Length: 174
Image (tube, rainbow, N blue to C red; front, side, top):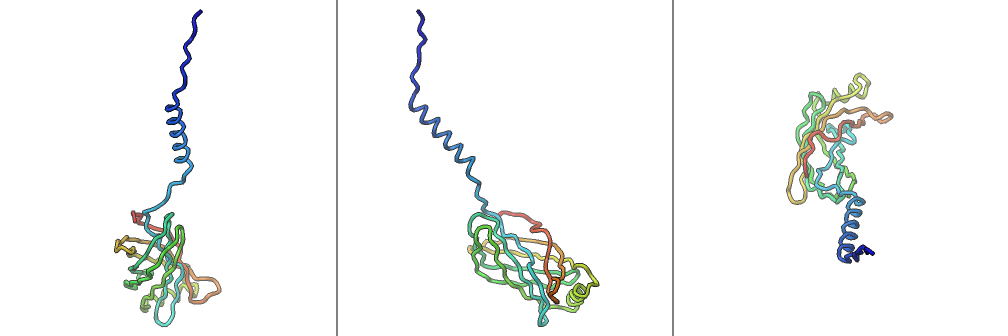
């Protein structure tokens, strides 16, 4: 009579296999954290007041970790009107996947006023805008941004405009 030899399972091999399976399961279940992405910058609102163009700019943190923003430098054009460059030191913390807004005041030259008046009166449907600049973190590291979009009048709110456009044109690592 021929007996087949039955090997006993190796307990070490079973433990290692179980641990490897658990590690794979945990890796598959865990959503990868998004980190290292610069903030998304855009125009939330714009209005003309007191000889100034007041621009409310939003900074959105696309990361899963908090982001510290120490300073933002930004230049803006409305159509052919170059409004110049401004700097703001908000020294803010933006929560993961959160958004904060900061204000920039630009001088309103005649060309910019005319364009906004045409937009408000309905002579124009929109005005193209460009914002370019840099965002500095709390350690002084800078990240460039550039956005192009359009301004539209806010219905029922004379002299107020909103921006619409792509989120970001120059994606980079933060």
